[in-house]
Each structure stands twice: as structure tokens, then as C-alpha cells.
Length: 210
Length: 210
Image (cartoon, rainbow over all chains, first blue to last red; front, side, top):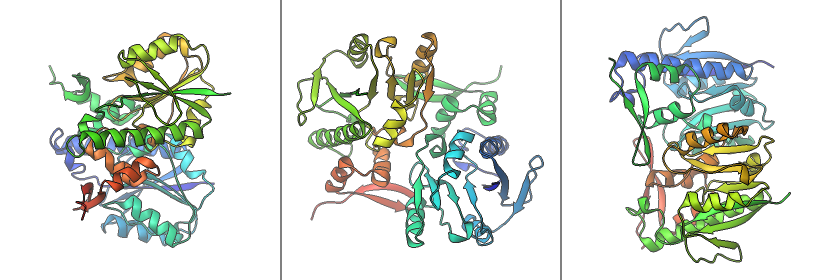
């Protein structure tokens, strides 16, 4: 069964909390490499990527759907037209692997979810898209669990740090340099980022180009 | 097969990075409740808990081994005398479940590992303890992967956010209040801690007792 994997994406001025270490062009390039890694993981699990973009956007020959409404409105519009299974994957999960995504879509329950660090939601699988509506922002994981309960959906929480690790802040880049295997890690390294171990703590440093 | 689960524990003045919100007695009680949760997860996976304490300590009727040497020395001493399988679990993993620990010990490879956030190591399973030596502190996950390679051990990285989430700082308590099910979560709640959602960010607050 081919399952669409909807990946919301903001091509212009993304990841502003990384502005302290990456300029806008670098953030746009880095976000696109994270998207590439997430697409690779979705395809590795046998899903068909569908990029849900906030504006006109082209990435290789992947299907792009443009919706200028907010994240929740755009996703809920899509879900309401999706009687079959659908996966929603955030675009900032560069540690995602096909194996991790497979664990989400092969659950027999009506729904599976992976929380993000800090109460967010990084991934949702629905055996029927139209049975659900999303409510991102804030403690969305708790909201999503509540909506599942209200709708009588069995919801499995998938225990994956690879899908749990979203990249928003400088500290998150440590995880990518340790555990990443894909294009976004290579992108960071090309930009000069390295792990820095000082006083037993692991951080990152950006080396100037010679 | 009964597998010993070695859980290093520091009963006195633990978790000093939580000093900003918990006094010493509260930290000692909270650390013990986290230990109880980790013991529960180890038992849930069919392992036999063995507390490796930095000083004389009693917790229910669990076996306690006292070793005043450093963490690495104490563990390596133990490993050198363990030809059979052994699990090493940190005591500050209050989201651990029996299911998560089971995934570690049922791996067929010679070794499995769960990284902590920030480059640390939260759990190691060895099919033969004496085949390995640990090297904690700093980017210990990378060191442990290197030691496995040097010793020709196949090492599986187990993809679990429940074992990946260690509690060191205030922000980590958010994860416990969202995902915890055990005694350490109840302990935090009794101490008055609640989730606080402000401007879309999830934090914690401590309510004063009336």
C-alpha cells in the first residue's frame, strides 16, 4: 500500500532560531537539505512524499502543493479529503530513517504519533486521514492525544529518538553532527561546523574557512 | 535468561544541576524515585537490578554493590568479572519502560547502545560484559562506538526517545511531566510542579503550597 507522506515546508526565511549562527541563505539551504533527508526517510519506508509548501516551490521532481493558509488549516484541509492512510512528517527531522518511519506506518492502531522535544508533535500517521484533525503549536502532543481520545482512535506513541529530535536551535545541531548520516549533516560540515568538547560538555563550533 | 541490570547511583547530593529548583533533600528523594522507575523498567524487561552505589545505601531489598571509585573504574571492574550478558542503565531515565529495555536486550548483536541527548550514553547492553570496557563523560557515545569497533563488536544503536531522555536540567522535567508514568513524575507533581504553556512554548512552574 502506497502511503502519502505530507511534509510541510517553508522555503523562505526558515528556522529563524538558527539566525545566531546561520544567515538567511544558509538557513534556506540547510532547511532544504533537512527536507531532502526527511524525504529520503519517507521513501525508505515506502511512502510517497508530498511537499506542502507555504509558497511556490520546486524541489527536484517531487510533488508540491502550495497552501498559503496556516499549518493547521492547510493540513486539516488536506486530511478532510483523505479517506485513506496518510503520514504527516515535519521537515526538520534530519535524523529520520526509513526504519524509524516504517515503525510508524506499520502500527495496526488507527493512529501513531511521535512527540517532539518540549511537547511538540513531529510525526503523525493516520490509517484514515479524514478521521482526524491536527492542532499544532504549543503542547501539541498533548492536544493530539486528546483529539485521538475524543475521536475514539487508538493511538500508539512510537518510541524513536530519531523522529523525536527536531532541529530548532543551535544545541540541536550537536545531535545532527553526532547521529546524522544524510545531506543536512554534510551541509553543516561544509559550512564549517564541528563538535567541540569542553569540560566534558559537547557543543559546536564554526571554523572559519582558510 | 536472567540478565543483570547494573544501575549506577549516587544517593547523596545528586543532580546538582537541578539545584536552582530543588533543594538537596528534594533532589535526593527525586533521584530515588527516578531510580525506582528505572528499576521498574529493568524488571519489566526481565532483568535483575543491581544498584552500583557510590556509598552505603539501602533501597527496598534490592542488591546494592558499593564502590567508591569513579564511575568508569567501578563499572570496568564489574565488567571484567562478567563473562555473561549485562545491561548498564543510568539512573536518571525516568521515561524508561520495560518495552524499551526489552528492545535493548533482545538484539542479537554483541552490543546495543542508547545515546543520551548531547553526546552521552544512557544505556549499554553487552552479550559478554568482559568483552568491553566503558568510558563515560564527554562525548561518551562516540567513544563507546569507537571501543566497540576496536574490539570487533557489532553494535546496534537502539532508537528510543524514552531511553534517550536523561534528566539533568530544569528543561528536562518538561519531558517527564509530559511522558512520565511512574513514581518520579508523581514526585514532581507532589512537589508542586506543573506544565506552563506561554507564547507557544512549554515550560514548568512550581506552585507554592497553600
